[in-house]
Length: 117
Image (cartoon, rainbow, N blue to C red):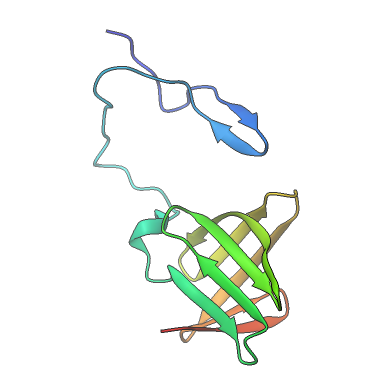
């Protein structure tokens, strides 16, 4: 049986990690937790909007985000990671950003975004 270590090499394709294909069961390490929460398990997944509705920032459960600005849908897209109340973004075009969740409000790039229910 071929074993792939957790530090298996990968390549980047258009900024996204492409992992090698592996056959057979995937070993699970249930005793070790990452500092980053998996996107699907944190409470911040969903739509966040500015008070005027101009910026709509959707955090997807798959660890990706899609941000609309005014009439421009998908103005920014990329991946994100949440650690505690901090969020880090890696946009598909190459820039990075961050933000902080404070009392149920997202503070990001000089903007204040509220959860849209």
